Each structure stands twice: as structure tokens, then as C-alpha cells.
Length: 79
Image (cartoon, rainbow, N blue to C red; front, side, top):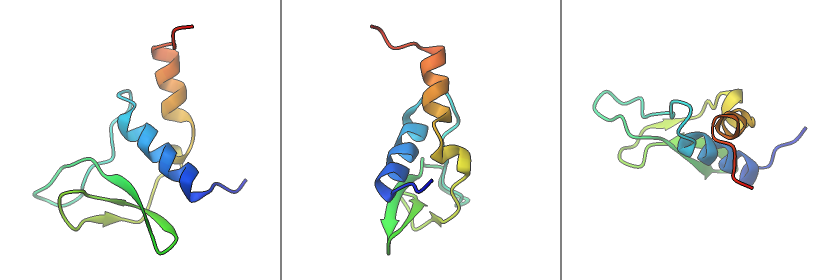
């Protein structure tokens, strides 16, 4: 199944903002900010908003519905 870059960015945002999983954070020794998804030359990467750290590897679980499903299970949306 092909996942578009827009879908990848949406999954990353959901993961980072879910509040039920640990966010992906900057790997620089002096910076621990939450990473954000960015498109660079047609590829999605995780980038630190405060320094030049860029992580090209994105775990498959981040690109799945895991964080959304867990959040919805723990905090069911009101109907």
C-alpha cells in the first residue's frame, strides 16, 4: 500500500501530538525538542525545529494508526 507524503506528515503529527506515546525527540546532545515532519527533496524526514538535527529514519509504527487507535481507546471521542 502506497502512503503519500501528506499522509506520512499527518501520521507524524498525530504521533507527536497524541499524548499517549512518547514523542520522537531531537538526537542532539544539547537539544531534546520534539521533531517535526518535513518534506525534503520529495522525502519525509524528522527535523528539529531548534537546531540542524535531521533524522531520516521514521519507525513504521509512527506511520501507522497506532497512536490514533491507542488515544481513541483510552479517551473515546464523545458522540
